[in-house]
Length: 506
Image (cartoon, rainbow, N blue to C red; front, side, top):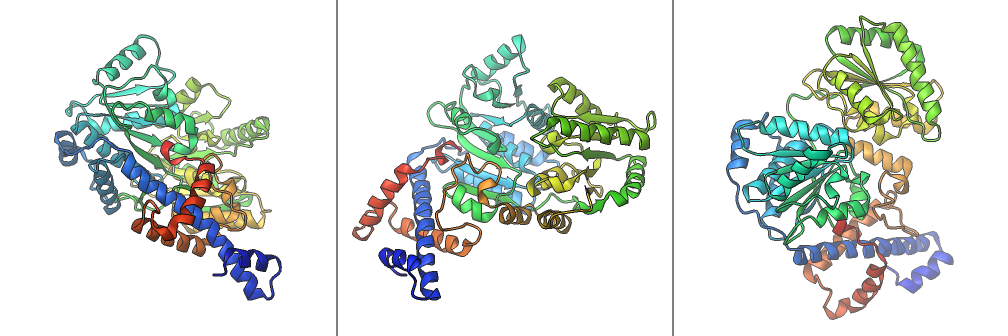
């Protein structure tokens, strides 16, 4: 590669095209390389400096659950992830692991088994979710999985838990009588004290602010608790390397046995009568249906008009008393939302008309059809999340993307991607390419480095090479103490001080 001075000269005054490309490559490599070196060095330092509780025992709780309560055989991917978590928990260093898995891939089982490891070693665990609906859902599913014979107490804490029941819950948590506490950001309030918090699990962490996540860290006594972050938003590998390069990453990349891939179709207004017949047939078979309308941030009024118009149209085709419809949108009070969602969950209503409130949080195995109206207005990751609300039982599920006839080239590509694949990681790569790294949900607050010349999508190969070389250097000389690394070290220290240190508060 040319040296820095040559590269700067050649990028401004190139003698030929190959010379220009060499100069560009050299400067892009340097940008990536310094970031990767910082991340990997930081990862090594964390492993050495952040001591963690040692969970040596795999005991009665874990074994009983594995042998008696496990509802299905673990997939190879789940076993692999559990092995990685087990290694972390007994290493003596604090675990800081990101667990990625598509909607329905079985992250909750893995999280529970990690919590049972904590309980077997005399520690408590907590699980924090971004919304009350999602937290309640985690609480319900963990309660069912554990059952009544295991002598494990699970508590639920959110803003709506008040008065004496709240005081009693906090007292039991302080004395260690609550083994697993599930809740919303209410978990990080000052009044919440644990006797011995050993493991903290955060679901959909991009929905929490950095400072909120940091408060959870402080709940540990002797050491910070081990941290497991779960996300159902697949993060492209290229973004991994720049955003989470100093975290350990586990991926559950297969669905539990018996799950059928969701059939996805793109239809226009022309097919509306056909769709109505299809929905009626599914309801006759005892299935339930979601119909989702887009949330237009600029205009909640317009959003509600869309939803109300759609609801009125449905009442003509699906008139009561033969059909019952639930309606959920952002303007409703929490109690109203919960009431409507529970009616749908309990099978009282066959159709749920909603805005994107249901993107995260409703698990109804009997719902087998997802209709997304004006699907061209949604981003790819949102479409994928919504589709993940169905396909949670063993029956065939369907996702129908309704759109207008006129579509932009990008909208066509988005809808075509949804029809052609169920793979969240493939979808995430296309999303990254279409939208660019800067606008991906959550990346702005997570400290994505700003590159002057390099582009993590276009220059993916240079990024991979730079990470490989940075890793090789740090493996051989973690502190960069060798003579030939002195200038690199001093430059890096100046650069590193300017970088926001996010990994400690993942």
